[in-house]
Image (cartoon, rainbow, N blue to C red; front, side, top):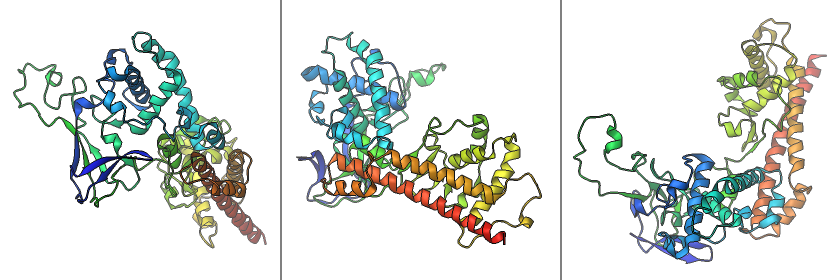
Length: 457
C-alpha cells in the first residue's frame, strides 16, 4: 500500500508517499470481521433491531458506547484509541463551539437538525440504552458519553452490507472527507442478511431439498478502499462524504462547510405554514408531473419529501410550496383535483410569460373561455406577496437580531476553522437565499402590476 497514516494538529489523516497512485487502485483491504456493528457487538442480542435511518445510528451508538466503556477489555480497544475525543461539528455532543455556536443557529436549517437530533438521542438513551446498560457489568455510560458515541457514528460510520448494515470500519474512517474525493469504500452489499455469508448458504435454500453448497469458501472476505482518480505523491487522500449533503448537514455531521454548496436549501414544515384547507387535495396535486414547471426559474419540481416545502440553492421554491399558496388563494373554491389542474396550469403559464424579459400574459386566444377562472393580474401579485412575506419572516427569525452587515463584521474577526464563524456563514447563506427569492417575486409582482396598468389604458 502506497499510503501512510499521519497524525497532526487536526488528528489522523491518510497521505500518499513519494509515489503517485493511479485510479482504480486498492489502497487498503479491511477484514469484514474487524468492523463494529450491531451484529458483531457482544451485546447484539440486547440491541433492538433498527436497520435504517436514525434508528440504525442510535443502535450502533449503543454498541459503540458499551465498547468505549469496556476500555481495554474491548476487542476494538486499539481502534477506539484512534477515535477523536472531540467532534467539532457536533457541538451539542460535547465538541467545540458549545452554546455560543448554538445561539447563532437558532431558526436555521442546522439548528433544526441539531435540535431534532438531540431530542431523539435523549429519548433513546432514557427509553432504550439505560435498560441495556443495567443488564451489563460495564460502568453505565452517561448521557454525554452516549451523545459522544452518537457523534462518532454520525460522522464516521459506513453502510457496508446487508448483514452488518451501518458499521464502524477501522482504517476506512481515517480518511478525511472532502467534495473532490480520491477514494471510496467498495463492499459486496448483497450478502446473506442472516449470517453474512458471501456464498450460497442454508438461508438461501430454506425451502429447498438440495444438499449443502459445494462452492469453494470465499477467502476474499474484506472491504476495500479504492482510488477513483489519480493521487499525486505526498498528498492527503480524501474520502467522500456524499454528494447531496447541504452545508447545514455537513456542519452538524462533520464540522465544516463549503464556500459554495449547490445542495443548500431552506425548508418549512407543514406546521409552520397555515393549515391547508384540504391536505389530501394538496397531496394529490403535488404528486402530478407538472412538466411546465421545468421552464420556470422561480419554481422547481422537488420530489424529496424532506424538502417538500423548500427553497433551494438557486433561490427557487419547490412546486409543493407554490401549490400550497396557490390553493390558499383559490380558497374557498370547492373544485376537485381534476377540476383544479387546468386552472393551476393556466395560472402557471401566465406566470411563465411574466417571468420572461418583456413577457406578457397569454392572450384570450390562448385560453379556454371560462368566466370563473381567476385573473392572473390579481392572482400573481397576491402569490408573490405571500411568498415574499414568508421569506422576510424567516430571514428576520435568524441571526440573533443582527443585520447582515453586522453579521459580516463579526464573521471577519473569526478564524476560518472556528465553529462560530461557520455558524454565522450558514446564517448569511440563508439570508442571501431568502433575500434573492424575495427580490425575484417582488420583481415579478411589479412586472405584473405594470402590465396591468398598461392594459387598463
